Image (cartoon, rainbow over all chains, first blue to last red):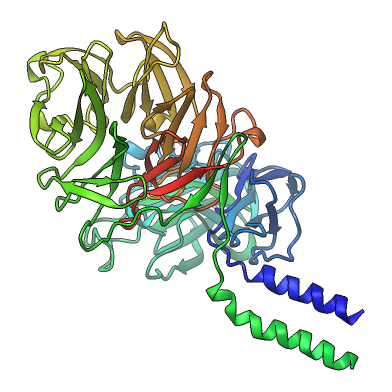
Length: 261
Length: 339
């Protein structure tokens, strides 16, 4: 009996001596819609025989013991899906991430913007609509769903009847090499009677040495209340910092959607 | 007795574990169907101190089986390898944008056509590097205002000796010159028409259909191969979503090419190699997604990170594939040995 165990252990030792030379690429994650009404469907692909995809839904890092992806995921709440590809012959991939967000309260009349977006990134319709149409921008920043600014972004919208609000989510894009930085600060102002503005929340964002790339969501919570007017001011990061190749030049600010819940 | 055996077993495991780092690396097999390959990263025996490279752009093989490779390192723009990966010779110090490299047998004498996007010209050279002829922007034809709008990336030679030049980093025309260097005509060019080209990075003459030779052009930013007849009339497109195709390379009934990246940005290190059959159907994707498991509209993607930014392939007589890479820390060509 022990002899068998010994043999088995010895064989596993020999197998484990095989170092894995190459790493897997991260799996491909897609969703039917980034901003969804009821349900978002997230699909994962990795067409390599013998590979598995393992994922998490709570934003934590997936590991070799996380659930195995077998069929499309139906998602009903804001979620950050993270996944890895694993295979016996290769090193585990880095993490692929996709986030989906439940849509917020819509506007009947187009919200207004204080600043005009740069002409090359002015969106495919009125700027206030681009930010509230539920359409997510792709990795192609010219797809008409993104607005790009070298200034701050001042957004103002209103409703006929008071709306109960407790959070605002700003969906932006970061690409260090394309000079697109995260905002430095976001303020949310509300008014129940027109013009009676009060600051609901103001949040400053520390800029790390190199910020996270791609879509980023900035969520601002405030005590629940009724409002008929809402104002969101997204502050541009300002001149590019010392550690950036384009230091001193204005940074870009990119936003495709603002959600009100 | 039992306990001692068990202890010994554990000790065996414990003693062997540190050896893992010295372990011989396992074979890596990539590709699909009939086109599968063993990855050999150590094929090239070049020494970076004596034969430095920057981007390794393209390769061509002469009659005697020597492999010529272009690099934009002006200490040696052309490296010449034997089939075992030893450097036989090196030359060229004046081509800062050395890029497209095509070998042509002209009545028994072999010549190289080297494009230089920095010097805005194409050079016809002997195999020893002697300059024979130059091709420049056809300013007189009114297509270009200035010479520096012309940034050629590739050449191909038509059966009648005419020279095709792909202006892949310029205006994306395919320019046709006579063997005497006189500009004749053009086709392609940037745009959104079916016959337009966007980043016309590579061009080749496809003689797989004996009676109907075609010109194949990679419209790299469109992830599409475009087909033209020898007069430049558009015949059709072969869309390959996700594949930023460098240049088409023909060998036997198969069409090979390096895919620089499969997603933006341009330095995303997401490349691989593709092989298409005679009907231009994808049959193997070494380093990328299994073509049999892709849905119709699904983009191709990298699965195994064997390559960063593959830029060209060369296929030898035994159908082994050599792969050069752009922007990949000066890595020499990788050999894929067909199994």
